[in-house]
Length: 394
Image (cartoon, rainbow, N blue to C red; front, side):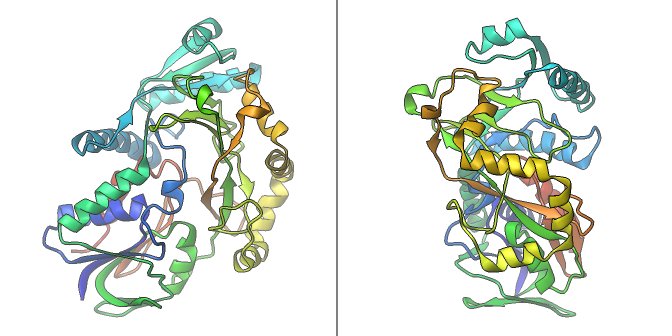
């Protein structure tokens, strides 16, 4: 029997295993994941941004975790020789409505203790000659990193502290008893005194396997990216983001330099019919059936008809996608949008149609279930892990 078991090989699950062994050295620990490699889903399919915490409500858990997580990520990367770069981020306003939201976001940034600079249109062009707008916020502390690499190094630390990692092990049953939790599947069966589930795209199903009376569902949203040609990789020096629309749950299409020298643009947010299908047009009948039969999904769809149709249009026709980018980078062309693998976001939706924007965690006597860990979960992975482990009984 293990002292602890963690289900989930994304960065939050691996960081939680790391934190358990950091705080409780000598404990026996097992981490299992059904994928053949760590960081196979959300962790390995994002923009690789070390976020600053600019967007979140002042004093909120999300804002605090993001700031702490950004500091920890940079410190850990430096200590472990993981490449990262603090390139800064420009949030660009392109019309009067966005300019007003930009000023509100500036005030929020100050309240959150995030270092930020308000610049005008002329200064924006001086810093980024290919970018246009009525003004921008510059966040100097934002960086870029490869979160798959961070996860792999954390996993190495878990193994060095005696933890075991088993991949290719889908869990199909969770049975919590008075003295232990048993998890099992085609690859085997294991028992542990305490269980942490960081299931990401499968978090709701794993919670139901454990008997939790949850009513939320995970709805997958495809985030489709493009990659610019190598000759255009120096188009911008910093991350270029639009001013977010507070009515939408996503940050918008942005230009993102990567730590390996590429330049990507994206993502959009298109409803997916497969939680783990990365090919365009992927359909998983079970995923689609559960989503389409869920009342919360119908309420979300009814409230976001125009947005959903626009995102679908831009997914099918690159010109619409390009138009979003050209609002702040007018020299981009269709030829600049080269295919790149998409990401899939696990969006928790409540039965009343509310999109869950914050972390959702449920507990039983012997287990902790992370039901929702939205962006910036990769940046905030270590503080999230601290928060989880603090809820585990000795």
